Image 1: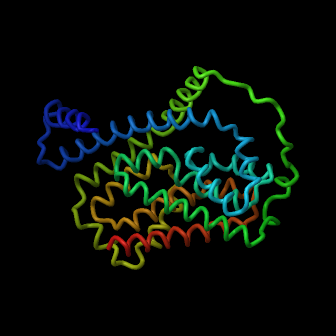
Image 2: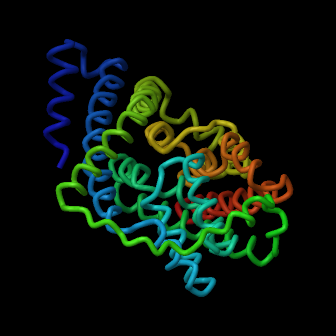
Image 3: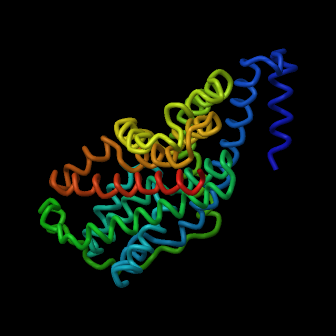
Length: 321
């Protein structure tokens, strides 16, 4: 499907820029051009389709639908909803508040908060483009598993008292306002506007991430990372998870980087742990959550999710050993 892009990347690198195909610079530049163009195309197409479908799912109806389900079904639905909602953890926090205020159980709401930055349309596009559908599916299933189980565990702890008091005081009333019907053209216009807005917000992350990945692709020796972060090193997964927490980024910036790291020998489980920690456990997210949660709940949230991420990392390293 992307063969024409590879031909274009080859032409630009080896003919227009006249760089040797055998040189490290040529390999890095070819990687950068091909992956950047591929990701841009995938981002535009997939985000447009997802945002168009989203126009048929009013937020108040979604919240009401989830609130009326049993606990397990609610966790599953909330985690799945994270796939079609904002692409970074900080922008998911306002929706988290809306869920709590609408009467959705806290554990279910946390399942959404975990899954939203980890497995959204941007992440799916990049994973599919750089890793293929098998790894993409494994990542999505792992992210859903972490979100569902973490939400269930935290929900059983009965920690509603650790949420800021003003959240419970702002319970939303049922929205009985008739829904305004949109024409197909209005939905298309919305989807196009949303897609361009997301594109403007992530293109620089993509370029930077692919640029770093291209440098690793061209200049880092093939076995360099294996000796430090291979599947046989027991400390690789927790170390990758801890390193990922302060490195706030969204999927657009981190996935091109981890693609290059995996290619150079970083174990897949370690890669997934690092990627999940960066997207789902970020310091800016904790700072925003501090306004609506007490510190104890944030620690519980980070601990449960962090342990889940490390478990997935070890599991994948063991299975794919």
